Every structure is written in C-alpha cells, then in structure tokens.
Length: 229
Image 1 (spheres, rainbow, N blue to C red):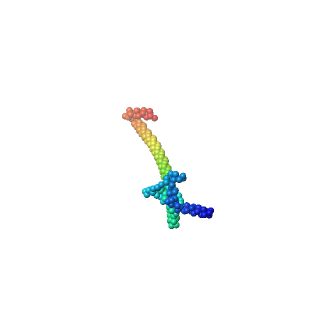
Image 2 (image 1 turned 90 degrees about the horizontal axis):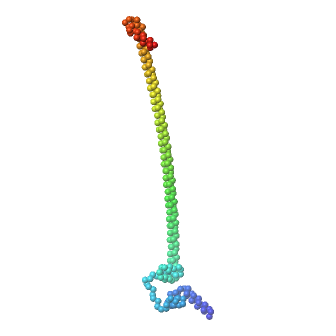
Image 3 (image 1 turned 180 degrees about the vertical axis):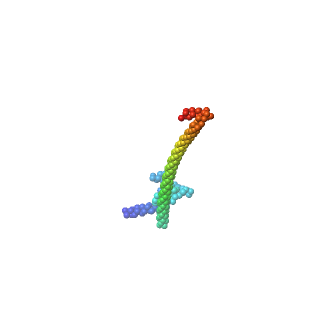
C-alpha cells in the first residue's frame, strides 16, 4: 500500500514539474477560484483577454520582463530553438567582441591621434619658443650694433670737433703770428723810413746848412735832429 502511494506522489510531482497542467482548464478554474489564499477572485465566468492588449511571449524558465506587456509563457524550446538561441547568443557575443575590438581600436587610434596632436603642439611650441629666442637675440644684437654705431659716431664727431678746434687754434695762432710779423715789418719799414729820412735831413743839413740860402731851412732841421736823437 505504501509503495502505491509513493508511486502516485512521484507521478503527481512529475506532472507538476513538467508544467503540462499549467494551462489545463480545470487547473486554471481551480486556481482562479476564490479560496482562503486567493479571496479576491470570485467564482464564475472569466471573460477572454482583450485582443488589443499587448502580449509579451517570453521564456518563463528564466528572468522575464514584466514591463513588456501581458506575460505569456513560452513552452519548452525545441532542440532547433535551443540551437538557434545558442547561435544567436554566440552571434551576440561575437558582435559584442567585435564592438569591443572596434572600441579598443578606436580608443587606441584616438590615443594615437591625441599623442600625435600633443607632439605636434609641443613641436610648434618649441619652434615658437626657438623663434622668439632667435628674434630676441637678433633684437639684442641689433640694439648692440646700433649702440656701437652711435658710440662710434659720437667718437667721430668728438674727434672732428677736436680737430676743428685744433685747426681753428692753429689758424688763430697763425693769424696772430702773421699779424705780429706784419706789425713788425711795418715797424721796421717805418723805422727804416725814419732812419732814411733822418739820414737825408742830416745829409742836407751837413751839405747845405752852411749856405746862407738854406740857413732858414737848415736851422729847423738841425733843431729837429737834435730833439730826436
């Protein structure tokens, strides 16, 4: 007797696990009838589901999306469906791997571009810095050259001024010397004329002073000669 009861229980559990009675009308009727565990369901006629409502058919053996619509459980998938699901899953994995490879390639390419752009910016900055340094060096060199030329020009102008002053001084000395020499020549000429005139007067007085006709002339000449000795 105990063996028969065990067999019946095993068959009942097997039938419940297979899921074949889930959609049995009698089971549904008993499930939806009012019980102590389900008091809100009233016994009686259950209207059919509105065809306009969205129905989401999903595999209830795994996680389901309750927000996709009215849930409708699928039956156990066949071998072909499982293979199709496995192939779809494999294709999804391959697509995910391809996307990952593409994203990695894009990341590496982006990193390479960024590195190249950074290197280009650094190169341009170095070139700009070198150009600025060269321009600054050229500016300093030009300023130094201009300062040197200005110093040379000032030195030349000072040298020319000193030379001009020296020339003017020599010219003044020469003019002064020439004036002295001219004055000396004039003095000598006047002295020579005086001496020559005195000699003539002395000769005249000595020659003609004894002549009565020249007595009136000779006496003043002798008086003049006596005063100017």
